[in-house]
Structures are given as structure tokens and as C-alpha cells.
Image 1: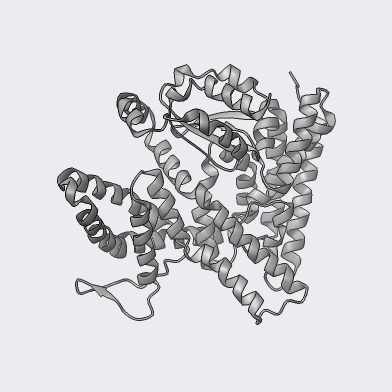
Image 2: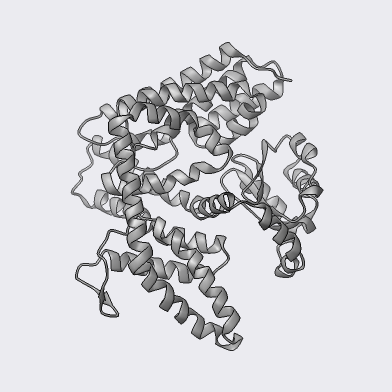
Length: 451
């Protein structure tokens, strides 16, 4: 089928446009907020060649498409006219209430955190890749005191320094409050918390803590803003919403952010970074083995986004991140396992998916390999997890760290260049080769049932 025909089938199998409250997409998945899940034809969706997997987690119904997700999204959008209209959402308030009751507090928090962080990942990855390219350029002779290096380094630092602003914006969009007010508050906090001179409000000195890179305070702040916004909408006349409501939102959230959420969030971020350092110095190899072995499982449940605050704070505190090594081990292990499926499989479709998803995993995205190959055939998933754990043990034993944040793949290996020597980068390359090789060998030897 063509992409247009596939899009029509997807809309049909999820119960039609009238069964969709809202929809969007990320790097590899179409994401739907479904009104009535009983109307979904799961068997038919799984039978579509373009659908690599189906995930129902955190109040979202997700179809794993792979790198072509944006093209599929563009085909689906014209078919969904009216499906996300405000009236349609209000008419189905009862169904939305039932769905919210079924969703546990843990799932709600996970959905909020992942929904706030995942849209900002291109910023982190882009900034990290700029730093990686600069590291390679310095090795090739680029002058670190020159204008070219200084300019690009400053551009990359913007991605990390103002990350709280981006997260606040996407968190506000996730919770359906004003994104620009949230961005304004978080931007004000960066200025106040990185003050050059003492500042005060209501006669109280503002705590001078490092706020740049720290996203935990804004994750705490946005739900408060939602509550204030709702109270204002309820008690303030509609005619005054445009002028009075922003004033009240700023007046309440800003002091609480300055004196409560900011210091608490910064303290939590510092504790997370210090915890990572403690793990690295005490049980580094064992901790990394566990994290790497379970990485594919956390991706399945969308929990891998919860590591982003840890990595950003770790990077801000120490200049490097130990935790990212788990993804290095797991990503290459999944690529190796998928390649083994491509080599050993008898069915043409399994060969095709194995080879193609292995290549995408090596270059950027692992979810096609995970959903299209490993989970479906089961044994390759187990082999990839074991290979990742062994590789993680190696990376942990040698304290391999990343000096920028990006999804570890062949193109992003330069993020491991840093420190006083090239040994960290060499060990990262050895770990990547080990993960791929072990994933391939384990899967090829153990085999899998193609039925």
C-alpha cells in the first residue's frame, strides 16, 4: 500500500477520526489520545507492514512507525479534520474522566515528564553534536581561542543554559496552559538564579543558586501554574482575563519559584549528579551493567526519558555524564541483534526488517529494531539485553563518560571525546564494537522462532 492508503487504514483501525481526542508524533511514533479504546482493531493494526509496534502507555495510544513517522503523520493529518476540535473534547468529557481515573498517579507523572522532555531532545542532541564536532575539529588543529570555536561553542551552550525554558514551554503545552507565560517565568529564574549581584523581593534575599541546565524546578512549577490559571479562569471575569490573569500568574508563581521550587530543584539535581558520581566510584561497573541491560525495557515503557534530568544535571555539575553509557551499550547491542536476525532469518520480511532496522539503530534510531525485530521475535530482545549488560560492565569498569548528550550511535561517538587523553573515546569505541558484536553473536547462536 501507498502511505496514503496506509494512513487511511490506520485511521479506520483506531476507530475513525471521531474516536481521536488529539494526536501528534515524536521521532518514531504516532501518538493518539483515544476516546474509546474498545473501538481499536489491534489485530489489523499489527498486521500493517508500516506499523512496527503498538504501545498503550501513560494515557497515549502509540504506533511505532520509525524514521518515516513524519511522512505518515502528514498523510494522516488531512483525515483527522475536526477530530481535535475543542467542541469534540468537551462533548466527550465523560470518557476523558473515565480514562483519567484508570490512569495511575505513577503513569500520570511519567506521561507528564516524558511529554515535557521528549520535544526538547532535538535541542539537547543538536547542542551535543555541535560540541562533538568541535572536539574533533580541535584534534584536527582548530584554534580553541579563535572566533569560529568561540561562536559555535556559545551556540551549543545556549541549548544547555536555556534548556529550562524549552522544557517549561513543552510542559505547559502538555498540561494545556499558556506556554509563553511558563517560558517567561523560567527565563526570569535563569536571570535571577545566575545573578551577578545580590537581588531581593519583598525584602527577602533571593537564593543565589545555579539554575541553568536544571529542569526539575520548571517541572515542579508548571503544574502550579496550571492550578493558578484554572482558579483565575474561574473567579476572574472573562473580560479581564487578558490583562489581570497574567499578572496574577506571575505574581504567585514567581516568588514560589524563586524561594521554593528553584532551590529544591537545584538541590535535587545536585543530589542526582552526586549519586551518579557515587555509583561510578563505588559500584560503577555493576550499576552500569544493570542500567545497560534494562535500557531496552525502559524504552518499551517510555521510562528512558526520566534519565534526561539526571544526565543534564550530571553534565552541569561535573562536565561529563556517566549515565549515558547505558544507552551506548544497549543501542549497539540492539543493532547487533537486529543484524543477526537479518543474516539468519528465513522469511524475506524478517530479513528486510533485520537489516534495515540494524542500520537505522547504528545511525540514529533504535525503536524500529526494538519493535520491528527484537520484541516481536522475543529471543533477540533477551540476547540484546544480556549483551548490553556485559558491555555496560566493561564501560563501568573503565569509567567511560560522555561529554555531551546525544543518542549514542556511529555518528555521535565523538561526544565521548574529552578529558586529558583520547583513552575515553577509544574505550567508548571498544564498547560500541563489543555491544554490537555480542548482540550479533548471542542472537545468531541462540536463534529465534520466526513464527
